[in-house]
Image 1 (cartoon, one colour):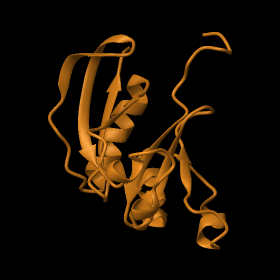
Image 2 (tube, one colour):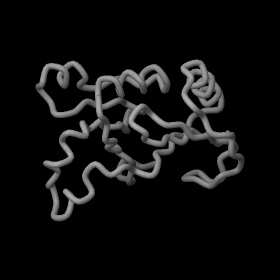
Image 3 (cartoon, helix red, strand yellow):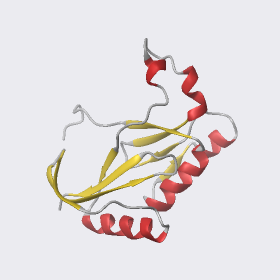
Amino acid sequence: MTDNSIRLDHVVLWVRDPVASADFYEKTLGTEPVRLTDFAAGAVPFPSVRLSDETLLDLMPLALAAGMNMVPGAAESAGHPVNHVCLALPADEFETLRARLAEQSVPLSDLSHDSFGARGMARRSFYFRDPDGNVIEARHYD
């Protein structure tokens, strides 16, 4: 991959409680919270969790949806959920995540096999919801 290639920077998820959501993602995916202290102090409008060196999930308070007006028509889409976000993990981390979610009694879908994605056919995948109902797919290719 070259430095000028297009990459996913962040996905904004609408959440009721960004602090609780950051805690959920830290405990299940092992993500690192970003700007959580600043958010709790009222210094920034939302925190994030880091998925990789280049990708974040922004945890946008649902209370801000009414003020979303960055482009014409954006207010009509504010607060609407994304169908799902898919995370690709190495096989061992995939197994660890599935076990961690089960330990926390997070409902999981059955395993799917050979589903198409950005890197071709993923060997296995499954779905779960975060506390706000956002659907997350976890998959591995190797």
